[in-house]
Amino acid sequence: MQETTSQDATSIAITFVIPSYNVEQYLGRCLSSLLIEQDHTGVEILVVNDGSTDGTLQLAHDYEEQFSDVIRVIDQPNKGHGGAVNTGIANARGTYIKVVDADDWLDQEALRVVLDEVRKQSVSPAPIDLLITNYRYDKQGKRVKKTVRYRNVMPVGRPFTWNEVKRMAPDQNLLMHSFTYRTAILREKTQLVLPEHTFYVDNLYAYVPLPHVRTMLYLDVDLYQYFIGRDGQSVEEKTMISRIDQLIRVVEAMIYATPQPEGVPAGLYRYMIHYLTINMGIDSVFMVLSKNPEHYEHKAQLWNTLRTQNPKAYDAVTHTFIGRLLTVPGALGRGLIHVGYGIAHRFIGVN
Image (cartoon, rainbow, N blue to C red; front, side):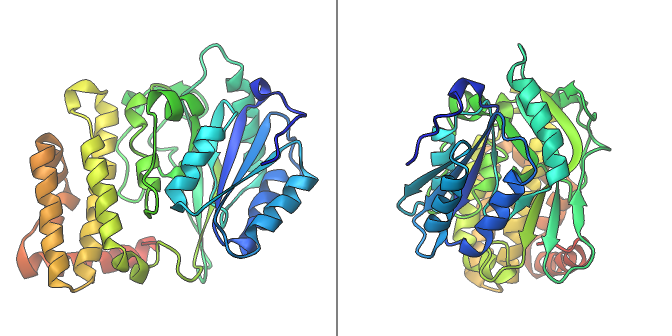
């Protein structure tokens, strides 16, 4: 690993963590979006090569050699996406941290706005805990790209707290793509360690730390460009069905991480129930789409886990429209899920 010498660690405002596994085809686009026409002051980029077997590591080192004041490459045995993010969190020197998957990229104009803000926040006596920005689905074969924005549910351009966050629409979720955390929230407050060799852990990254987030700021810029469509991608329908065990593992971890309503702001609890409901829904849908009776039983067990381990969260989830739909028993319930998924897939355009 090459150590940066031209930037003092105390002056780094933001660390971009790029988990990279066999992404030789995409990594250059990702890194270029962070580097081209940007002022690199206060910026660190950590490329975590997660045991790639293609040319990813060599390409990362080529960029590191060219941008030695900004880029560090960390090479590790394969640990999965969560393991790569863990390494990034542990080694980040920035006041803030943003994870960018190597097959995605950032919009340059939006990035300038974000860099200006994190540089300002990093020297503030009261830095915000979480910076929120928009993300855009760039789905292959779709002419119209969907962008998820939050201007109707939270204040724009000023610090705010959870109780100022309004109710969100079912497709309006705060994902890893939306978040730039203050590094201390992940490392000291949450002590976040994601499961290794497990897909979909980005849901834990976007959920578990939230009770430690006190102050936020939303910039209405379309920063994150989320690429969907490459073969074998984890969000493909067939791939998700084949990984139902990992979907269940992640949502069970979310269930245990969901706080009691008395201990957190009402706005935070409302949002966490919203996101838990969406993820319970995703698991339930793909277990039903599998048409596997064993998965039907897993679905019932998952809902029973929620009911027994966090009864208040169970009551809150099942009082939502989506929760009521998902818990209709038997063949009728499965039929409703098939119809609902078809409508959502057609009009929302993403899994």
